Structures are given as structure tokens and as C-alpha cells.
Length: 284
Ligand code: ATP
Ligand code: ZN
Image (cartoon, rainbow, N blue to C red; front, side, top):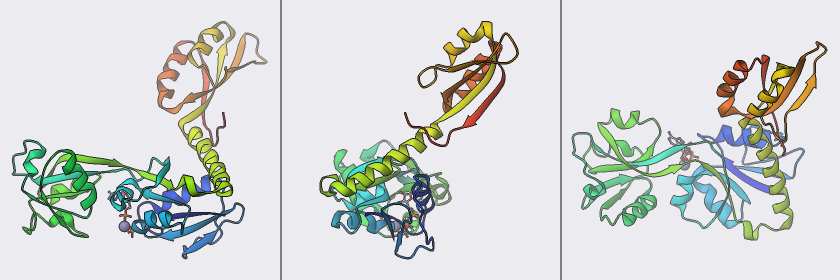
């Protein structure tokens, strides 16, 4: 049984559950008690506060956990990042009152910075050889400068609108964060490692599917060579003759990000009836 810790309720919860579901794992009771077992896979979910996840994994209460890199780095436990998950993206930035003139990180020398992330901030300041006083508060960091308890703040930023509405400007980014799956690979053991690998194999198949599209089109036989040169496919494209003489159907798999550009070229080469179809899972 592989025990996976995810955030009980918050910004990462839905996406974490989605991930588990995409791997074909059925979680029977979704009312998020502390623990839930999968009905069709040797997996147990632990619903926790995100701040508790790194320690639970480190102590072996859970085998792996899904958590923001920001929380992981702040907790400071030596855990392996098993997989980067691509959701929960945010950045950790320094911000100062917008009236201040900023001339680089040296500005923070001798100043007082309020944050809920003292460790990440200290590491950033050390890296830049800046000495500043860190004021650790657990919430509402953005109002610190307004009420006079700090000269600057260090906090999570996504759109930046919270900063603006508090009269602040973002001046430096210390970390780009996303949700990651963490674990202790070395002590996981054979059985759990096998379950984890099976889970990751499935997740990769779903991820790859999302990154690609299945494309079908009709092409005049005379243009097939040029058209297949534009759409290389996984191995090579499938080309089948149509009932109507002189025409072929060409099928291939193309990267999502290039679809429109490729379609323009295919159009130019005389392709017709172009269909772009989502791929649910892709195993190479
Ligand atoms: P918990 O109750 O579990 O302690 P929380 O309030 O500490 O939850 P959330 O606000 O749900 O945490 O955020 C969880 C994670 O989502 C953050 O640690 C961060 O990695 C990520 N995240 C992504 N965008 C944002 C954002 N705009 N603000 C805050 N966190 C964000
Ligand atoms: Zn939290």
C-alpha cells in the first residue's frame, strides 16, 4: 500500500485529486476524512494541511506527498522530488512600497522584511550577500509595510493585484514554484517503489496525451509525400487510400503547441477535412 498525502482543502486539492483520478485510481469516499482507500489500486490518500505534508513524508507517515515547492523548501526536509506536476504555479517575490526607488537587492541591506517564509528569504539574502532583519509573521504579510512593522515584504505572488492594492511593487523574484510530488526514494522499499512507478507510468501517459493531438486529414495522392513530411508522427504517419480514387487519408500525432502552424501548412498543400482529436493516454 502506497500512502499519498495531499492537501485537504486549498489551492492544490482539486488538482491533486484529479491527478490520482487520471491514473485510474478510484477513491471511494470523497468526503475527505483523514484517510481514504482506493478501491482498485494499492493506494491510500491522507488529507492534510499542506504545511504538514513535508514532515509527514519525512517521518514516513506518508510515502509520498503533493505539495508546493515553496512549502517544501521552507520546511527544509531532505526529500526527493519524484515528479514536477505543473500546477499550483506561483512565485515568491520581494516587494517594497511603490514610492521607493529600487536599485537592486542591496536596497534590502539593513532593512526589515516581513514574511511567512523566513527560510527561503534567508537563503535568498545569503546568496546575494545582503544582511536584513526578517520579521516572521504567519499571515496578512502584504499589510506589514502599511502598518509600519516592516520596510518590505516577501510573499507568494500570482497576479500581483494584492501587492498593487497595498501600495507595493514587486522588485525581485526569489523562487518560481509549482506543485511537486515528494518522497524518500532510498527508503521506500521494493513494493512501494513498484506501486509508485506504476502510478507515474500512468501519469506520464496522461501527460503525454494532453501534450499531443491526433490529426486526421484527406489529401490528394499526389501531395501525400509533401504532407507526410510536414507531419512526421510517432513513428511515421498512417496513410490509407480512400474509396475515391486519387485521395488518401493521413493520420498522425502532433504536438499541441504546433497544431495551428502545421494546419496552415497542410491547408496550403491541399489537405481537406482536417480533424484534430484529443488524446486521452499515450504510451510510447
Ligand atoms: P492549508 O490550509 O493546507 O495550510 P494554505 O492556505 O496554506 O492551505 P493555499 O492557499 O491553499 O495554502 O495554497 C497552497 C499552495 O498553492 C501554496 O503553498 C502554493 O504552492 C500554491 N499557490 C499557487 N498559487 C498561489 C497563490 N496565488 N497564492 C497562494 N498560494 C498559491
Ligand atoms: Zn498551509
